[in-house]
Image (cartoon, rainbow, N blue to C red; front, side, top):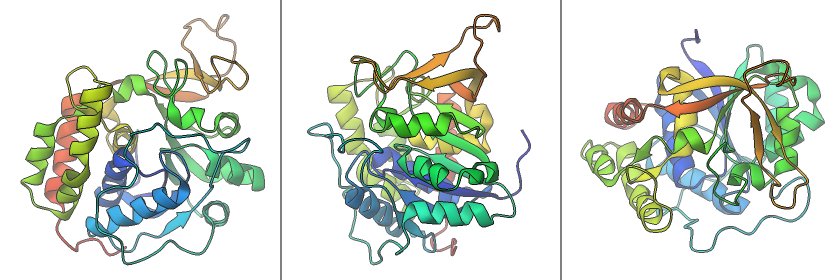
Length: 321
């Protein structure tokens, strides 16, 4: 797939530890021009996801990327209780700046409506901001060149026996987005679990001594310990789901895609929030349109090399916008 030399990117996130790595990739990769970050409630309440985002940017010495605070809860019902014991506030210094005064949804609508060229969006949290923006101004969907979504699971789930957290926390929003006609690249747990990061990887990055590497080394060990002690993955370490979604924007060989129809279950007592991925190969059986490219495999070694290059190549102060 051909890409522009520098692809304008907005990251919509609920910043915890894996979102943080995605932010570093988006801000530092030379083929991406991170024009803004919008935050949403998900991993943490909105005030924490926004604070974490600002912390990551300042700790990694990435100035000039505006942050817009977004939706505080899902389209329907109250916010979902988060998993007890899961760390929320990233252990990084307090930032010296705050989020922009404009609401994230208003920013998305205005920016997309006025865009002269397609904008790429990486949505790595609940899809509430995007759903609200699409409802407010349906025509903006034509301004999105690609929409990378980290969410869902085919054979692997986490927040329930049927669902992955980003989709489960706002399934109505996900339903709006998947029906909107946007070119979607979906990164489910099945792919992200194939590319975990280990303590040895983090130690190797820390040796680089760059602000981004040291920032990652400050919070990834806790994530790795949490996974290895409570929900181990094959090969050890911890997946950094969101970073794979952003990385594949510029290196599509990190994953293998299959086209499929994806729909969101809204009603099931046991299956609410499930991403129903129809992988049936025969058109007469799978009659619904294939509305997404779904990552079904990830190249762990290539992904780790990709992250290593990001962390080692940063020069302090080399990004001013």
